Length: 409
Image (cartoon, rainbow, N blue to C red; front, side, top):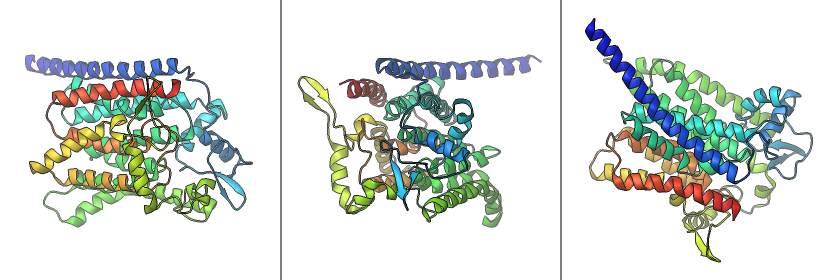
């Protein structure tokens, strides 16, 4: 009886410590976000005029897929004289549900705030799942979402912001599902990745990571490959159906199951080399390596096509150091190699893109890689070194200061 009471008391103490660590980090993220929104005079409940998904949701409710007319301030695909939202469709689903409450005036900035908090929550759960202590896990989760471009992206409710914030959250959920590749999460993880592809298509590159996690979590001890594949197959049915739905929707609009619409944006129709080309690589490298500069005694940032990506997204520095450390110490395993291989292909494909994000603070496209890079960093179960902790602290400060200065300057 006494032993049972001690076990229960120990479990209660661990649960209390877990939620205490979570609460400290959640309060920090919420405070930073709300203070930045207040400084920039951004009302949480105001709908964004750049929320193409709300327009698409209302069109779906009327039983159509094409918009009734052109909206000149939005990035719309033009195909056979009709106008379509040029972004992958998954974020339209929650927007469609919310439209029954708000109509076309969905408060998308508030939605982005909740997605940012959701990403922090999942990041904390991932760090704890990988056996990091409560407060260090909270600190890393704060850094994961507020020490990168996701913080600034989440402050606004445009179509670009919604797509990246939702892709980040869904990819984080796919990571957590990969760490718990058994039971319900063995189904949820692949589904979340499939949904993330419907926000940012290149997230499909991480399918090998999720599949390898399923294989590791479901493999049948003492049985052959066929038995393990038979256990994995049911987990892939819903993601396959989601992929088929994307293909059918794309085919209905553009006659091509792989075309989400960006190739039919006027910008890319006029481009000599199209949307993706080796001709863009060198200029993109120059752009994402540019440093901020001082002008009229004030710090200034390049406003188009990105600047030094490792300043706004210092998780790349931590992940790069951990990668070199794992290689030199011969600790790189299959999961680590897959994470870096898929992220490397992802990075290279972005270098082929014509715009690399146009007007922006930092280099926002590259936040798409951060859920997987954060997983790589957390996999080594050792405390953060002082230098790494200082980088994390500096990252949050830089994104607060830089984000405010970028929009107020």
